[in-house]
Image 1 (cartoon, one colour):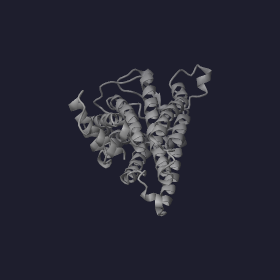
Image 2 (cartoon, one colour):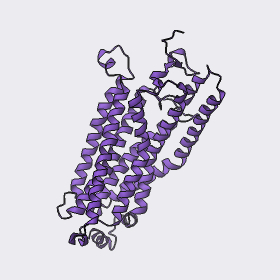
Image 3 (cartoon, rainbow, N blue to C red):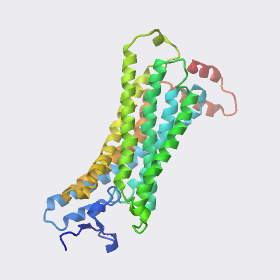
Image 4 (cartoon, helix red, strand yellow):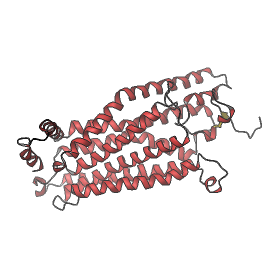
Length: 365
């Protein structure tokens, strides 16, 4: 083997055409066993056992998520969407944003089992997907992450507007619905710019146009800046404005048009939880962007550790799909009333339920 040749990692059960240079290894797409094969040429059995332990821990985490977190997230996201859409009259601006995040959470719920049941995350995998499925999963994941992050960001900004100018209706439910539509449109357009890099990174290098764009680091840099840096700066700016408003006592503080005080606690909790769950994933994108790829690290034994941390960070990102609706269910005081009205409406069916109209009017006022 020449001095300039690349070290390769091969799938033990596949033919030689599946061998990949370490520098081009797409982490969190390849099975953990592929990475552990780098230790076969060494005598460090401790490192090999550590790599095997990483794979086992990741498999256990994935199974626990699928058995506990996935059904909870699916049920509560559907419940959040159905309850609010069935009580459109009583919906507020924060409700619209949380419905938007719940829909994005349902998309994550579709992506999660496909990834977690593959050889990427678990030893006891049910299938292995090809590059086309891999790219589709990345696009859906990126769209969901952008919708969640920007819904949280705009919720913070609209909350400040509602606190500062309660009678202008700039942050009304009607306007918020249109804003959420623009969020999805912007997320799709942003994801397509990354899609070009991901597609060209997985097809033949014979195409001249794509050979110049085979740069997955560029796609990660786009997602890092647009999906994390911009929302983080905007949320920080919004919280500074909100704190300034809360310090100033004005006659408008007693205005009945203002949002429920519990919304402030829900906003603060949702922003903190979202950034706690998504920051590790975006930090791995930052590392991949700055370092080029883990394979460029001089010590190849860091690869399994990086692989493990990146996949755990993605599990944390998936966790936002069930943490947010659970938190909304517990901290929103009006959700229980909306759920009870929906259950009474289903019980009454075609008959008009008594006191339903008066209850809706009380919630609106």
